[in-house]
Image (tube, rainbow, N blue to C red; front, top):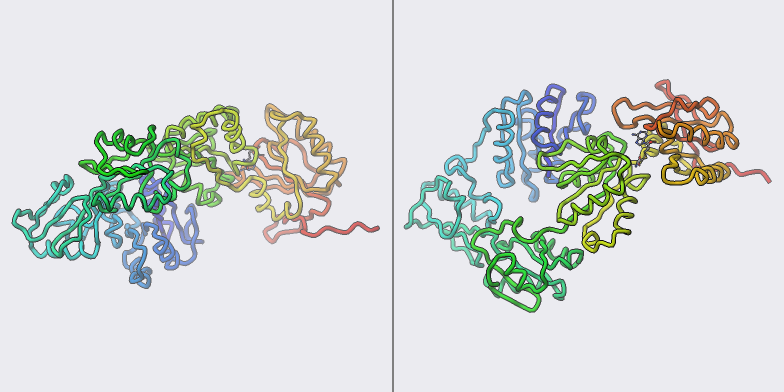
Length: 561
Ligand code: SAH
């Protein structure tokens, strides 16, 4: 999860932004009223820190360590989350890991210190003495029991020596007091084993189970197969299934319950899947499953591939705080990001390993097909739209591409649409509630539909006295559409009808203007403008700051007779 960078004053903003260079998805939380330019404003420092802590969010606080400790004191004894918590001096001169030793706080502290070119204040004795944290083994290894691990490390620190049984290349680099005759043993093996008092058990994740979705209870099948083979559950690296079962919901649920990734390969029978993936005979074979044990932890990248994912996301109008959290999470996991260059830039910053595919705004179908090609290879792909992807944007284009392609592999992709705040709603919110009653959303672009349809719809929407939201009102290539549309509207609506114009809403240079149908001229509008025309009941009144509120009441006057 991306860390939260929490600052108290503007003096820390520069350092906070430097840290975003290391953690591009991290958001800066700034005290409301004291910090301009933060991503999120908060009003109570202590409450904010505690809420982040309890939701297991890594915290980088740019303030005195003491303030952080006092703020979190009340929640420290609670069971549950213990995310990494670090204090960083606001002038970037010191990095102090405070909490979350088992969640990798020292690793973070070192990374931050390197980024800021200072030293990390590492105080963990085991780590200082042995150069590694035994209780936080690297990827590919799992610790059996933490409580026991802690006792084990304190025995080591008290001066005992230790021997290592099994393959653990990473331990070779640690400065451990090794002795073949030692009482204390670090045992690295995937066999199920009840640890003795003087043993530290570390499981290599070197077990792979190939399953078929035809198994009645996949979790039970896998669990029994592991038991029969004498293997411990934490040693399970992944489930492997046939590519044809990629979209199978039971398989996904089982992988989730077991807490392991799900990979896919061509081939059908579980036995063949194991042989193909590991190049060795399965250790145990049942009707719907086969178990393989590799010599070293399994590198998932070498086992089949994952199910590809394609998410069509809405960025909202532009401002980061108007982007929904699900979209942020999707951007963080993406391998590839496709879209119109302006929107792709708006979705950033990105990590160096994320691939950007920027295209022209008009190449939507081609972009949609490209996205499926990438996702069908197992990649995690994001197609970016501004506002909401379902409103005159990429969601429908992506579905159209899928519908007409006749590509079974594209249908296996995990396709998701993630909503965003559409320009009409963002503009309406700035002005008050111009769309507070029934309204009609239209694009005035006749690139993809005949102008006559637009005229008919406008005519009927006006007759129905709906408030109107116009997307794509005008452009250099289509200079006349808005004028023609307004001619129709003016035949039905009075000149005093309020009109709201929002330009670059939620972006730098945002502009809101409130005018009337009588005064509106097309030169006030461009392709980056949203036009909201009131109904017969829409009204305005003065705002304390000199502007105006616009709203359409929720009720409707009854026509006499
Ligand atoms: N999917 C987008 C709309 C794409 S159509 C959404 O849901 O918002 C493009 C049109 O949307 C533009 O011509 C403009 O009329 C409007 N628009 C998009 N973003 C805008 C913004 N930030 N401010 C004002 N209008 C915007």
